Amino acid sequence: MNEFDIAWVRAQFPALEQPLIFFDNPGGTQVTQGVITAVTEYYQTSNANIGGAFATSRRTDAVLHAARSAMATMLNAAEEELVFGPNMTSLTFHLARSIGETIRPGDEIILTNLDHDGNVTPWLDLAAQGAVIKFVDFDPTDCTVDPAQFQAALSDRTRLVAITHASNAVGTIPNVAAVIRMAHVVGAWVFVDAVQFAPHGVIDVRALDCDFLACSAYKFFGPHAGILFGKAAHLRQLKPHKLRPAKDTLPYRWETGTQNHECMAGIAAAVAHLQEIGKRSGSAADSPRAAMIAGMNAIHTYERELAERLLEGLAQISNLKIYGITDRDRLDERVPTVAFTWPRRTPRATAEYLGDNGICCWSGNYYALRLMERLGLEEHGGAVRIGLAHYNTHAEIDRLLNLLDDCQ
Image: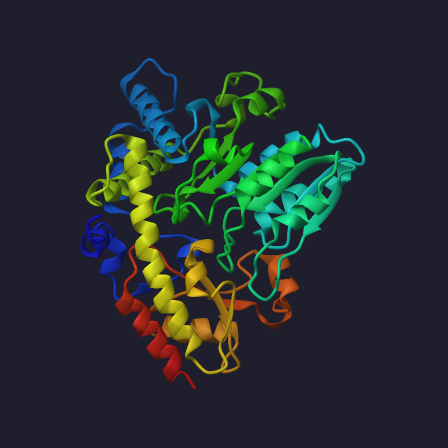
């Protein structure tokens, strides 16, 4: 494999020309020039609604097909299984509404205390249909989830398990594949929130055999838009809530109203960026999917180095507490999203201090409400979150560590 070309990567992101360090990536990454160009060109040459008998409408049809094809490559899915919408949360509420109509009193839904609230509240709402909600806890010492807890929670009444592919707060990557296998034994569906995992690793819905999976393009260097994968059989079986004239074929029966066409143009460009990294990695990338896998593997290897530097540096700062996996031999069990607290300043004050010194990062609960409550942090302002992406550098991490070390 070729050495990761960080100079080339950074040159693709115009925002990096600012005197800022972007460690706010879990809340939304920066976008490539390719994404900016694709969105602009859509407005300039193709701005229309779909299905028309004229040039701009036909171009829009082609743009949407390219976006669906790109996401099919990224997730290893069929195009008809991909639904676009404003964001993961809206798509999850949309799907939960339809699943809720099939729930009978006493049916069970299993959630986790590790998840973003976008994969909690839409399912909690189904209690109104009589669903019994169960929560699987995590180990507060390293914020990991034991799959055996899912095994204990499952029963012949379990209808759905909702689980994150990676925690947006502490970075944990649960053993999603094992959970899916156990859930399918009792006939339950599994919904995977892959929003935080998508910019950091290979997603393969076929290998996972998940029933549904959602992600958001603005977390993998694209525009603000959400993508929902659903097995075709499920999407045909469930009743979508749509307008009467809307198509009843997949995936259109699930896409309410006019989509954000310009964002879909940007999605294809974001996926192309990840594939280009694969082509430059020196790995075999003789197909679009192979290029995607090679790109994500190259990103994972580089980000693992960054995560090791960050975690080792934070561990040297007096009284600073890191939440999640810190063992360097277990870094493949987490994404490079790190939360910490310390007694020197509150999380908000720390974020303000870093912000005043050119470092963008988040503090609070980042919508991982149950996690922060479980760790006893919610009433104290949550935690500081440093989220790395493939355009960050060792020098930026050193800048952060020096600022924290100097903070009094």
